[in-house]
Image (tube, rainbow over all chains, first blue to last red; front, side, top):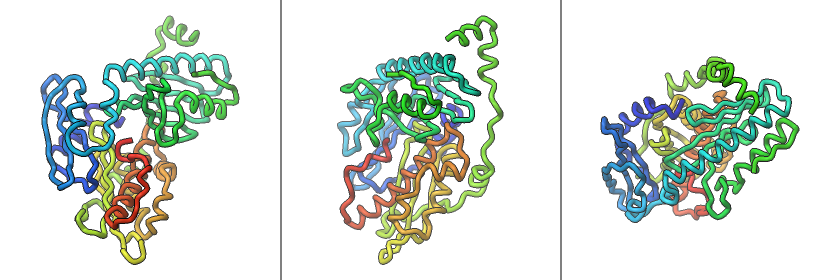
Length: 193
Length: 162
């Protein structure tokens, strides 16, 4: 699984040996060192216009991205817009809500090979041969990632104005998308929002 | 709800719901992982080179895809990549470098993540890797065009961060 801590540590250890420069001036890379220290350490590698790579190491338990976003040119740092705790509350609430509603839907509608599972904070819904949905949190980006058999991969950010999760590229909303896709797949409508 | 409760009562919940068919990497993914094509780097200061850097280590995947473009024809003559990530991410970016070679820049922008995913038979949880590869291609083309001083559509999403 791409998100296993062991795998991340392995790939990150090799990153630490290789520093790479980006040619685009507004890039930023967030690095997480895996030390033996109990709290996660974050190191930022960023690139200003003179192609000079600066790096800063600091350890923090909670995200303190306001400080970082004021340093140098960078793209929008979405993680600075939503605190981690708040993100977890919102994302968990949405995921649990979906878990309950889709489970009820599965019980009421007869779908061959229906299965729903929530483990390691990943929600997996199998609609038999019709396809499988996978929903998980992507905490560094403060996003919910969804993999759909209908629309493929998409990444939803929390929109505080609309109070819902929105995929910025297509402007679609998570719950509405799931509603229309599940109806399209299984035939029966579902109410999620 | 009832099914869940029943499972709990019978104590079968965890064991049963966790069982699933064994999952394997498709042989194409294994092939690209063991024999990746076009690993390497070009000089990013070379004016004929476009570099796309997408992803973030914290998310688990970083891809750097570079293209070398023939200035006159706008054709991609060479491509290389370096990826940190899972086998699917490596395979996706390896496939991406294979597919962009010899094509026009406008043409490679039409490469869709669904095609890459289908070619590698990626499971649902790995579809994000193919999207990242598509983003890497777009970022590389965007970078090349920016270097050439052509107007770039600034309203395109920040592919690297999204």
